[in-house]
Length: 175
Image 1 (cartoon, rainbow, N blue to C red):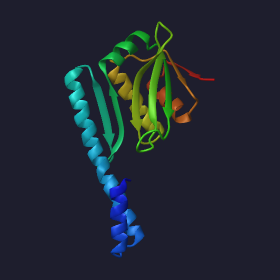
Image 2 (cartoon, helix red, strand yellow):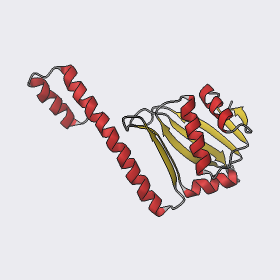
Image 3 (cartoon, one colour):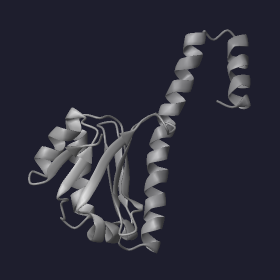
Image 4 (spheres, rainbow, N blue to C red):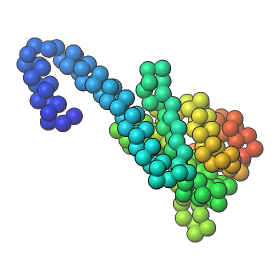
């Protein structure tokens, strides 16, 4: 919320609009803005694809057209995974973006013992079906190559999704 929003709220209140209606109008405006964010993200990824022909991306929307999840993977990440993707760490971070949605990170280690981030995915929730979708997108982006071992923090939804999508992979917990 910026200074202009505060001023608009003040004027609305001064003209007799109830506070709950003012809040509702701002919430609705933000929801409409999320639809715009989806379109902007698509435009951005299409522009990236012009520069990186190996770029893979996918997204999922709800019945109202609002973004649920977005996955993208550039060509360099695909090459790194092809070389160093036998063991993959799979983790989610929380609340570090505008929407307070989890960001799922796939990473590994290269031959210099440096972390390689194979991919990041923004998801709206941490349900099992969400992680299944994420892992299926990951396999598609990585040309069907599954990791031999997946390391997670033990999240049950992640574990179940790994069993479904990577049935032959060993699942280990980080300490």
